[in-house]
Length: 110
Image (tube, rainbow, N blue to C red):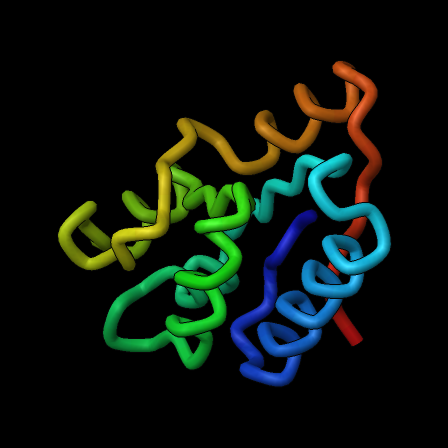
């Protein structure tokens, strides 16, 4: 799942989409949300509105990936991210790699 927006309603929608996928497919689905560009704020401790939801979903195996390129561009350090976040070198490359591996693509936006 790709998250590029800083709108908190988009964040809530992304969390709902993840929950719905987990409800439908349970443990048979792997989910990775890749936040990049303005969406990187979703994974920042001082900006996210979805911390408790991320904690819950991380326990069920959902991966929340932050784009290192976006972090560099915005002077965001690893310490600025929520503990549930992992870092990938490039958000766009992560998405393309997953698609090449057969993962489905879902973009969250309005």
